[in-house]
Image (cartoon, rainbow, N blue to C red; front, side, top):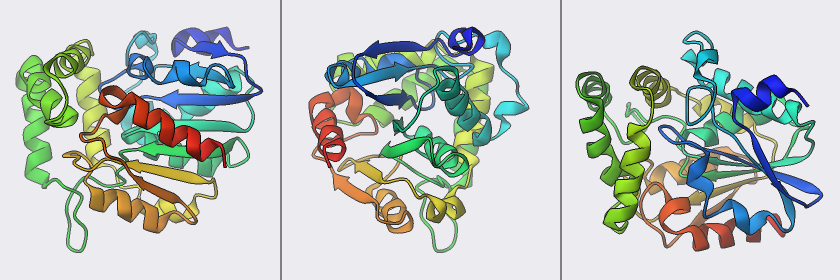
Length: 266
């Protein structure tokens, strides 16, 4: 095992199964978002949790603006975590931007990944002629500007948008606290990379069996986007959940667990 990577990405391993599930958190979060999900898989799988460099309890001194200027840098984190643990035939569960990180990792190392599970994926957040990603360029610019001027106010604004109307105030407040725990400069660059990336051309290259989990009402990644991802990834499966919001693994963990388990059982 590579102790440098274990520390750098604050890797935690639990469970006892013969196969491995790796959970990859989304923008503004860390591995704590999986606390109600991961234990459900520990009986049958080895479970791996980690923080991207710059997030959570990772070694932020290892953050490089150059490396993480694109999603490829985050895909390298995923691959290096797997290599540090000498993993093979993994299941990668990626939330939000980590769905696209998973796309890049699976294309680079298709032999590593047995299954890919996406929660609320979007390959392109910006609208353009013939494609509705959900955001205008001015929306993203305003979001980044808000992060620069008052990071805590930005977190207060984003938390209820991401969690959705059906999430209780305690869950929304907890998510806001998690957003506030980030380094503002690193979070700003991660946001810019996330919301300006375009992975659409990569989707058809995915050869890993893929599940797309989409909620009924997601302000960040609408249903149409989930359907688009499904249409582009060969032989992918699409499940429209009863949950709402962009974080079903937080506000509807039981349904999320059931959907993942059903896919893994196939």
